Image (cartoon, rainbow, N blue to C red; front, side, top):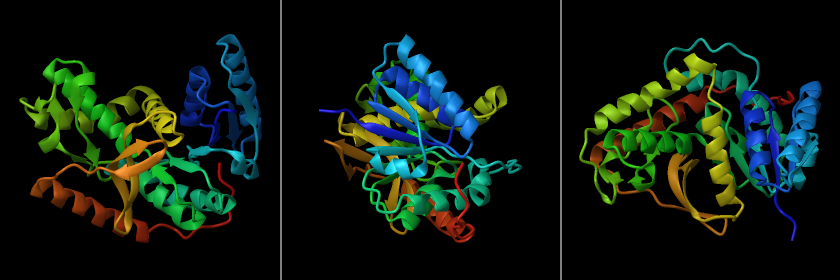
Length: 301
C-alpha cells in the first residue's frame, strides 16, 4: 500500500521549514511543492532531495503546479503575499487584505478537491473560512489554535515545574489577541491547576513578539503543529488537535478528536466568562470577514 501524498503551497520561510520537517520525518511518500516563484521552488526541491538522500528518508520531493494538488491526500497552505505589516494590535490580521485574494484564487484552482486542506496563512481563521467557501471543500482546517494550545501547555508546565506530558488544556477561539484559554478545565497530572494561570496567559501573549523580534516570523512552531495534525487527518494516529473549523457562521479554533482520520468536536465545558469571550471572538471574526476583499483571479504565491 502506497503512503500519503502531501502538497505545500507557498515556499517562503514557513513553507521551507515545513517541507524540511516533512522530509526529515518521512511522513509523506511524496511531497509536492507549489509556488509561483519558480526559481525558488525548483531550488528548494533540489535541496530537499539532497536532505532526503542524506537522511535516508523515503519521501520523494517534486515541484509541481496547482493542478497537480488534486492528486494529494492533504494540502498545506503556507502562502504569504508580499506586504508590510504595520498593524500593532491583532497583528495576525494584518495580512487579511493582502492574503485573501490569493487564498480565493487558489481555492478556485482546488474546487472539487476531495482531500484535506490545512491553512497556515494568517489570519488563519479568516483564511480558512475564505478557502472553504470559495472552494466548496468539506475538509478545511486552520492550524492557529493548535499552536496556541501547544504553547500554553508548555508554559503551564514550566510554571508548575512538571513535564509537559502531564499537562492538559486548550486554547480556543481566534488565533490572536482574543484567544480564549480554557483555564477552568486545565489540569496538571490530572488535577486542577494550582498556580496562577494569569501569569501563564501573559507569557503566552508575549511569546509571538519574542519570536518575531529574534527571527522575524515564527516557523518551527507551525511546522510542529502541522506535522502533528497531518498524522491525525491522514489517519496515521488518533488523538485531539485544536483546529479552526465552522462554529456557527464563522471559523474558529476548537478541539477535535480524530479517530481513523475522522474528526468529532470535543469542546470542553466552559465557564460563563469563557463562553462570553468565545462568543466575542466569533463576533469579531464575523465582522472582520465582511471587510475582506472579494476573491480575484490572481495566482497564489
